[in-house]
Length: 131
Picture 1: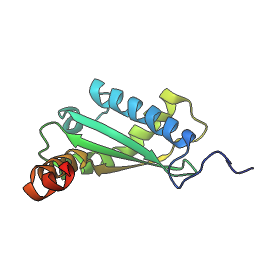
Picture 2: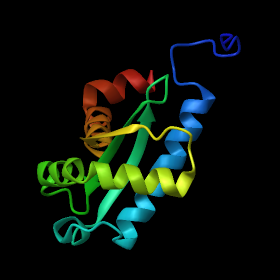
Picture 3: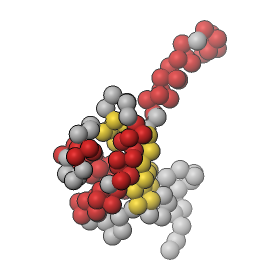
């Protein structure tokens, strides 16, 4: 198998991005429709912010956040408990040759954005940016 000569950096390849986004959409739809047989999981509204896949596409890490941001660890545990069923449903829906192993992490993107805004509001930083 030849190397992708068009990928200049250490970032994800186009294939990784495409598969990750496809899995994100499928996972979001499954969770939104409540297709899982776990009533505890079906009761929650969960946002799937991003799915990152490993270079060999064997592992997909989904970054999730419950609506309201409370109970993050519980949501990750519930998803991990049901990952076999979720993986089966995603594989069936997408028709991939190999469905990646699913892992779940709390999405802290919004917290980082708030911290960045807070930093930009500081007088020292604002003065340096304006110069």
